[in-house]
Amino acid sequence: MSSQAEPAPGAAIQDPGGLAGIWPDGSAPAGLAQLARAQWPGTRGDELPPVAGFVTSAFSPLVAAVADLCLLDYFGAPPAGQAQGERTAIVLASSTGDLGTSAAVAAAVQAGKRVPPLLFYQSNHNAVAGYIAARWGLYGPVVCTMPGSAAGAGRSATALSLAMSEAAASAALLIEDGDADAALVIAANAYLDGGAEGTAMLIGPASWPLAASRPQTRIPQDSPAPASVH
Amino acid sequence: MGVTTAFGRGTGPLLDAIAGGQSAFGQTARFDTKRCRVGVAAELPGDPKLGIELGAVIEQACSDARLDEADRAGTDLFLALHTDSGEARNLAASDVIGGTPAEVGAVTGLSYPARIYVTACVAASTAIADAATMISSGLAARAIIAAGYLVDADSFWLFDAGRTLAADGQVRPFSAGRQGLLLGDGLAAVVLEDAAACRQRGVTPLARLAGWGRAGDGYHVCQPRPDGSGLARAISAALRRAGIDGSDIGYINANATGTSFADASESAAIGLAFGQQAGSIPVSSTKSLHGHALEASALVEFVVTVLSLRAGLLPVNAGFLGPDPACALDLVLDAARPARCQYALSLNAAFGGANTALIVAAS
Image (cartoon, rainbow over all chains, first blue to last red; front, side):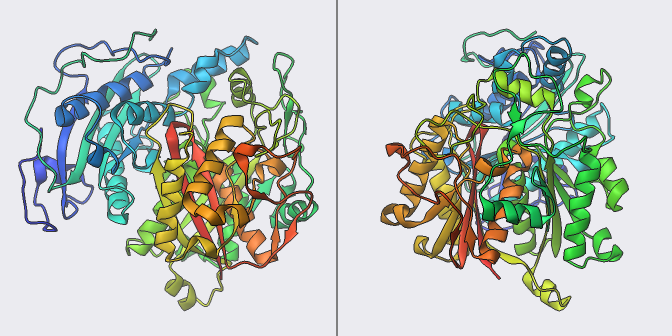
């Protein structure tokens, strides 16, 4: 949900749209608000929309889907407004990483078969971040991490929320440092059995205009042309 | 700081290679490349283990920084790592990194990393920028940043499938006739510390991180923006943070991988950021010597930049065949160039349009 907080510039935000809840120490950085939030899976439609050029693994389609839900909620349709897009970073954290792609590469090498070239282009987390950045016109820094705090958390809601906390803290620091004003923060875990779950949150200045509240679990209608997701 | 490349373990062999200008490439001995277009990489001899090698460079960095056990216990470790190929064969794998962080802990006694950076070729420079931000904002007094990659079959076959490896067995950054990149072993670790805290401990720093900047291209999944504007914004942010002008930069350690469009984009970025001065700043990409160490590349190159500043010797841009009009830079050609400079810039760019710029000052 979009934040309803509208404090004075520079004032500490007590709980902007639940932002404080994701911070490890329960506080929220001054001046930042949660502008939009989405999660996958939602209340309907468990099938991840395919993303052109990304195959075999659910990881990148998951990241793209949850990012789209979040940004559609805030911006309505791609691209983001120019002034906001120029100052928006992408911070992606995962406690699994793209297991599907690395397993597919390993299987091809073990079998002595040619590695499908498309796997090269999706072989690190930056690729889908670049896809989102190009689609939405986001020109801030791109950061992809695996949080130490989630190590050993296994397959659990805790792992995802730890990843989100870590990514949000990282994004807030990046914003404070000045290379971005806002960040699309994504936590995404995709498992070898095909399970996939993710959360995305747009955090930015509390002074940015608020989005109208929209249903956040719809599948984007303007997804790129279909490609295979197996 | 600690470093290991195909030239050997420690800063000595790397500095010798910078001075000598010979690349470390040879036929890979670790795995079968019969099905690949290319079989060349820059590798350490034998069968090095990532966790042990990483532990060794971290030990070296902590020892250089005179961090005792208590200092280390209170210091965050930021690791930059590539996907673990052993874990990729584990059908019960829960993540793509596997046991390397735990192995590092066993060697060094350090806690599990606070964060593992997987931002491809800017992973380690992003870790440095994050650590610098934490220190400058008072959230931490110091951080240990480490990164490691050892050439493995999975990534080699993958890069070969992407037709990114140089078929002629040489990396030729910014050169006419360049054919692509070659992979290389690379591990490095540095301790970044608040200058006042460092002085208080009576430790003399090797160099100063004067500025850092990051920006995105918003352009493509894997190709850089041709006009270089994303990387140029990262450079401008780093200069601004350092409080210096472009004319203060005496050397640029470029990201250039030897890839046609990427090197041209980086040249455009240098042109955008430095304007008229762009053609008079010495530039080289040392990937032409030690190869591309993926997630560790930015830290290896950061160490190279520090070594170059301290030695007053700019590394050669090896493999050069002739000028490319799209890369009109003052390249360090033929041999390392003696030069004393106060500031050097280390550039990195990655898939997804991620760009970083780090400015190192002689201490």
